[in-house]
Amino acid sequence: MHDAEPNLARHRPLTLVLTIGTLLLLGQALWFYLMGEYHRMPPPALLTPVMLMATLLAPMGGDHARAAACLVLACGLLLIAVELSRPTGLPSLWIGLPPVLALLLLPLAPAMLLNLGLTPIWMALLGAPRPDIDVLLAYLSLVTAAALVPWGRLRQQAWLRATDPGDPECRAVSPAYLRERLAGEIDRADLLGQPLAVLLFHLPQLEVADEQFGAKARQAVLDGLCQTVAGRCRAHDILGRAEEDVFWLVMPNTTESGALLVQQRLSRALEPVVLVETGPLETRTRLVMRHEGEDESSLEHRLHTATRRLTNARDA
Image 1 (cartoon, rainbow, N blue to C red):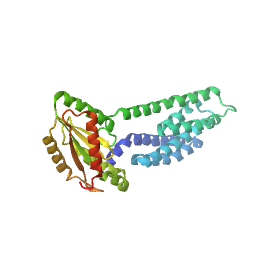
Image 2 (image 1 turned 30 degrees about the vertical axis):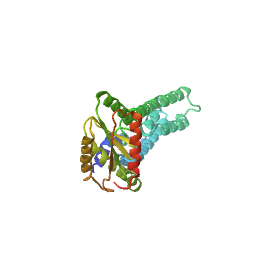
Image 3 (image 1 turned 135 degrees about the horizontal axis):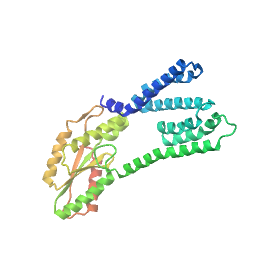
Image 4 (image 1 turned 120 degrees about the vertical axis):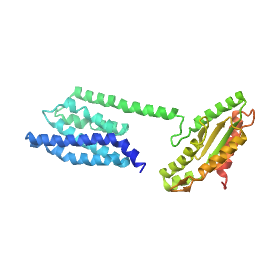
């Protein structure tokens, strides 16, 4: 139920646009009927049920939303083709709609291929024995210019993913950012003469949950650990993903006795966590204390050694 509500909210703008488009098509068909232009009624009248079907599919998300986008694109291209073939139409207006419509409803690469592939058809529908070079250049320029918007958005998303310190799957920092923060905490511990503790967590159920129950079960295992740990550690503690199924909790200014108390408290907090597919959340923990004056490479070597022992252990 909780997954359905965000899904509906995410697709609500698309559903609203499709609803308006369906009503416009229906209104156009009625207008042609009232004006006595019966020869122009069939396209909007026949495409209205298709748009209605797309409107009903869009809120379902996933493959249904992609099918809705394809139906809307087909309806739009058919209407544009009908208008371009009319001798009294406005070709300069209608010829600019296909590139924009395709780029709004399809990913960048398929949209570009479709726009270039349909170029001869649009030129032929204009009715000229030879394509008007000005219209052709204007169409190709629009195809290129319209593609810059999704291309720029894809570049921005790639840059954000590359610079985002957070792990894409859960409430933890990425492995690269974890190493940076660990190095910084080692320097700070040396400067202030403070202890540094790292608590390791292993999720042996993660791979099994993904293989047997799918992505939702995998996400439930990750959320069960990360949300429980993040909700019970200090604001300056750092929970990071070291490997696929191993997390490190870096605890600055924490003595061994304090780290052991944290380990016990988190173990008790994780015991009641029960997942629908895999049952009780299984975790294995190990504590690693930084030796006084120990450098970054030595501590990381001990952490990776402890990680291997933890993942290879048969008993929790």
